[in-house]
Image (tube, rainbow, N blue to C red):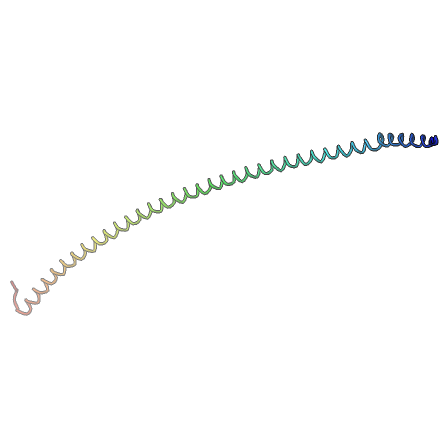
Length: 141
């Protein structure tokens, strides 16, 4: 049994409609989907590249910051060392001046004490002689 001729027409129109839908709808939609996938893939690659550059820039910034911080700490240590050396020098000079002043004052006190002793001896001798003269009524020899 042969099928009716309308079945062939239906098959023909279905195939024709499938070809038209494929050419006019499915291929353009598929092409747009592929283009979007490529755009997304490209955007992801650019984002990954930008992220890698940002990480590299951050690492470089941190490295430079650490180096600068190290330089600052070194300068501070140098300044502290120079200040301590100056302080020690000033203390040594001051200590030497004080010791000299104390020695000079001590020498003056000793000289004044000796002069006072000498004066006291002379005064004591003259007072003793004066007391002896009064007691004896004549000049003591």
